[in-house]
Length: 499
Ligand SMILES: [Fe+2]
Image (spheres, rainbow, N blue to C red):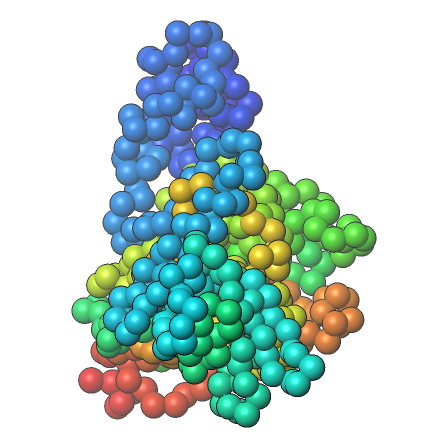
């Protein structure tokens, strides 16, 4: 195909910019030749540039972007315009976060809602919505919480004698935004209760179509610990080529595959990483990943966001992986490259919030009760706060003037994270929470910090029945927990449990 592209250009007397050539090579042959034809007609220069291609993307519908309309709707992709970040941007960012979460809390209909400035000198009972700016234990072992809203600052005392409240309040973290029910005056407030913005769905969503979503990520392609043979087994299974009859029948029903970041191991991610790299360039790592993903049957729609090891900036939100590093992936017909975090909608209106999960370590560091617990317990803390990374400084982020992209504006049906390298599926307030496994054996770093990954497991979720299965590809035989089979019709399956 490469020579055909160059031949057409040469015959017409045009040269191709290298960057554009890489993009074209990532498309299917027919599409690439179609795009070249359009660009030759458009170009006023003898060198056809990537810029010309970008400016005319709309003309390639059906060739490049036309494929990306059905099946997956990207609801919240982050598209940054590069600009200088100034102090004022941080103020607008925090203000927008506060106003949004305050709006959610106020909808609960509090009695005596007040701002900090309007609290009187006379004692009363109030509700105030505020952000936590400090927290300490006093000499008498009570908890003193410093709070602020857009009108002022105050302090709230949580009495240790109120054991239940005291215990809950100890888990408040800096920058949390909560509604406090308090007694007292502007000089000193005493906490009676507090509530989080909270994420809750009235009921679980059930789809119309009997199909599965598979959740994976953390491939770490390029690492010496990358388990390529296991991934290929997973791919073979997705294509219905391996597994027992029932497993193969279910594989054919997988319509979506979510990949939640750390798709490659990256380069220069930590000091001394090169010793553990088999492939030492990001572009080559993405080419290897592409080679694997292209083996998956084309009717599986793949949604991929970046993580900390991908070739994007480290600060969150992270933009989608671009053609600068992975032109071949950009050109894949069934692959949707999205930002981190990102919300997408799939079959029957399921809203999926995907987030790689850089803030999870910060949560564990700030909340001792989360050490050693299941990932889903940390995901609950995130959902409760309606914010993916509430604590300033627990990971890098890029503030945007307009809004805080890490706020969970609408409650998703499915919330999926990667990063922990352990597969889990739980439910919280009718939201399905999924943590993905990985395709990398234990790294020296994980060994040092005592993290035990659980590789090669793939959670599956049936959109119609809400059945969950975790498929294990770590062995030569594909395993799963048989459990109660709620799975709908399996064509070609003789199992008497199938209807
Ligand atoms: Fe990872």
